[in-house]
Each structure stands twice: as structure tokens, then as C-alpha cells.
Image (cartoon, rainbow, N blue to C red; front, top):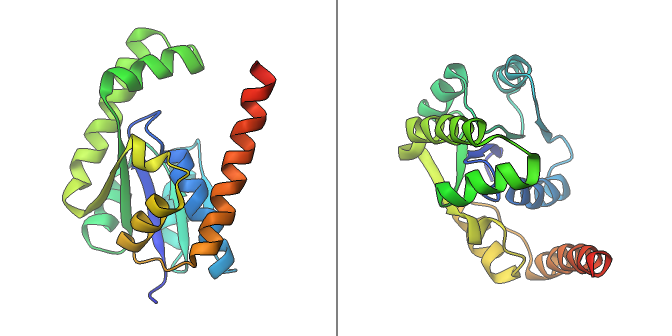
Length: 172
């Protein structure tokens, strides 16, 4: 298997964090030298991506030009998550308290970044990226070239469903 080198990008509130977390758990099990993270400072993100030649999993909604160049050269695989823009913006406002203007600007910037690399990307819609169904997860991992046993996926699905059931029971 080639060394996994992925950047998860795409629209805000489109399932990128869930997809990133699933990938991180699977890749950490398979590769103890995995460098992973999500950086709020763009330059820190760029430095890690440019200076690391080993296994890599990063998450960033807005892709800087240096990283776009690496994606276009085929040095990094990009995964883009998408969602209806209106749902994405409404979620930014209701979940994080963004003003409508900030939600529009953030969504537009993320779409512009994704558009620059879409021909090189694996693109997943919100429903797929947020799925806890082991069969759905297995399908998208296979598309990414990541092999994993069905029982690992069932265990992972159980873990996420258990977490979700705790959150639901607290809110009832």
C-alpha cells in the first residue's frame, strides 16, 4: 500500500470532521507514524504538509496555494465534503453563532478552495461523510484505497452510534 497522504477539505458543516475522525482512527491503527491534525493557523498547516513526506492526514476547509499546488502535482490526495450551501450556512449560524454575512463568506471561500482541486478530489456528500453505517464507510474507504476489515468498521460504527445515543439521551 502506498503511504496515505490525505487532506480533508470542503464546505463547512458538511461532514468533514466526521470523515476525518473515521480516517484518523483507521489510519492510526494501520500506520503508527501517521502525522495528523487540524490547524487554525494556515501557515502551520502549510508547513506541516510541505515538510512531511510520511503518512499524513490533515483537515482544512480553506486550502492555501502551496497545498493546492501539491494536490495538483499528485503529492497529496484531497477529499472534499459537500452539502447544500444553504444548509451549510444555516448550520454555521445556529451551531457557531456566525452572522449571516460571515456564514456566506466562509461558505463561499470553502467552495472556491474546493473548486480549485475538484478534478483531483474524492468528493463525498454530507450524508455519506456523516454515515455511521459500516457498509457506507467501507465503500468510501475502498474508493480511497484503504482496506479495513468489516469487523473493525462494525466496531467503529458501534462506537459512533453509542456516542450519539448518549448525546440524545442527555438532551431528552
